[in-house]
Length: 249
Ligand code: ADP
Ligand code: MG
Ligand code: MG
Image (cartoon, rainbow, N blue to C red):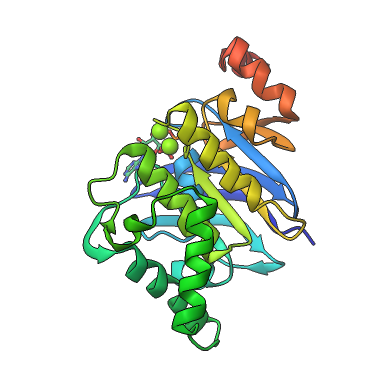
């Protein structure tokens, strides 16, 4: 079975139907890039996968690891390995990065019925990941994303991902606003998570990210559906021609 199988997905926010019969199949070990015009429903798809409230699935199915996850809360999905990176990471003043990471790891373990991680093991694990992300360990005692630059927030988001070790990573425009150095570090983090058991869905507008993170498949999402799929060459074609030619096809 596929890690993720989405069939004929329809979803709305309020009275507004955004996803209109979306199909997407993601196998373990694969990286899928999703591109498409503004307002197409890319962020909506990401949020529906993560189980965000306010988004109502009206028909179709989302199977993750062979199970229909329609009834699962965002917390349950996260505990079973679905990680969502936000387009606009939130700031949580007063909660240190370290406290946040510990709470997140232990909440997921609890949800899975596992005991908390021993404090020393946790510390060693987080430090290893901080080093891998070339971050200053001092940021662990700062408030979550508090006063962080755009690039630092993204880097912090990838750190959260490395610490949590999800199976399905959904990254919504994680490359937006990054300078080349930050882009490289974020890409290294995504590549470090690449494994035969895991998969990544990368929402992006730019070929630039895909030069560092090689996708296996590229899809175009337009008006709530996947309208075209291909390999890495499709992203280069889109960069060259835009999206207009697809509507005509
Ligand atoms: P994309 O990420 O592809 O740019 P989005 O998923 O953010 O697209 O948005 C798809 C459509 O849903 C847009 O027309 C947007 O205006 C609409 N939309 C997004 N959020 C809401 C909301 N909270 N309420 C109503 N409409 C929304
Ligand atoms: Mg948008
Ligand atoms: Mg978006």
